[in-house]
Amino acid sequence: MNASFDRLLTHMAMINERLDKVAQTQLEQGAAILQNSRTVAQLDERVSGELNELRWRQNESSEMLSELQKRMTVFTSTARDADVPPTYSALTVDSCEIHVTGIPASISTDITTAEGILEALQLERLNPHVISVRP
Image (cartoon, rainbow, N blue to C red):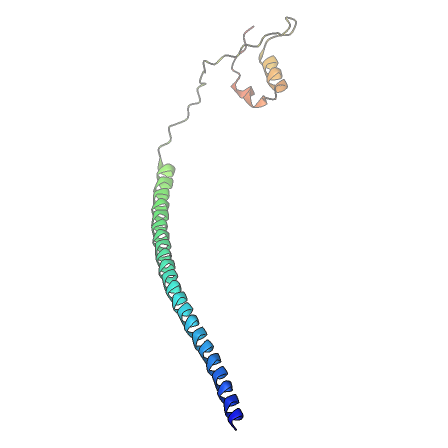
């Protein structure tokens, strides 16, 4: 019976040892959970602050956009209502002169020749600006 009692005590000691390990693991996990809770709380506070900053910036940007839209509306109405000076049908003479050399003497120098030179240079858009041609 002593042997049975000793085995029972040994078995109980092993169970107590296991329970002590479980208790130690629970303490360690409790400490880790507490640390994680603190970290989550810090992150929550930080994220909340950043969200508030983003909301503030969004409101500020919305206000700036609204102000720009108002200014654009005023600008557009002002531009539409601006007094436009009357157009003059009289020719305006520009003092710009272009000198082209190397034209053989056998070719007549007139506006048609000037237009041909502009076409060869792919500058036909300038033809209306040719007022006169000098030999």
